[in-house]
Length: 442
Image (cartoon, rainbow, N blue to C red; front, side, top):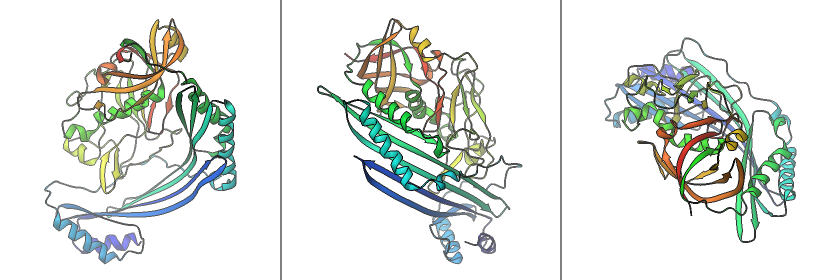
């Protein structure tokens, strides 16, 4: 597609401004089951979204071909604009003063033969099954490789490009003993293929599954709770919308009007960092072309800022935080490496557990999105994990429901773990110890 010619034609047709947002995605998916290749698929797709401002209306058109007739695109944009009844003010971004460096794709992914990647999956599956005879099936063993390029060109002279490449492996093991069946999964994400370790992946998922066997509910009462880092990431993910400028515009966040106030305990700091070097998701700029930067959303419990795209920033008469990302043709507000950290001393998981006379270590949460209310912070979720007694883990626990209020809970933190990890949902967190939460079980 000739971007310069499209922009020229659009300007001649009466458009105030025009932008081309182009993406190219390459993907490789391999899956094995019972030693056989179940899936081996390569995908390669392109997409072009053209946005323009015509008669003070923002109009958009998406095509998957670079050879689309430019005059046809412009006519469709005009037709779309004519059908709109909105009276909102729209803008296309003119550009930031400077941009952080982008990330270059890792050539090692293309240098490794697909046959080697298949062999790695077969090895993982084999090692999981060999770990313990109670492992009856490896129900899922998949390798996925992704390379995504984004290009933004507009009539103000903005010309940006970014690329992200990574791979991940998902393995699920099913175990059975007596009449009880349990399952566990592991997701390993890497920026370099050579960092995958078949032995570690197999051992991790097998151990997770075996440890769940012979679980039973805990008595109903309030307990000190340790949310293991993965469970904590799921909980944060459920309530991350309370930090969104979109929620603030709609007045559906409990943080509205509380900038500068102490809303969480002093142990809590939340940072949104799209430039985190070790993260899978690295973004030098957002999908509106706004330069990315690391920002404190919560600093030692004090609420500093909502996350904004251009539209929500304009509503609140502030600047975009570089969190405008596309969902289809619409641009929403989304996190990028949203991390829970603390300026206070951290604790090992063993230290957290040793200080509990009777409590729970929660490793899995289910049904959060149906049992949570981001407007007021209440949540109720089915959970599983381990029962703690006299400073030691004594048995696995399942079929319990843990409930509380996210805002209140973040004011009752007794300890921050030293096991920080960024998960597939773009949430980074260590394990967290909560003073007390109600649990329904036996």
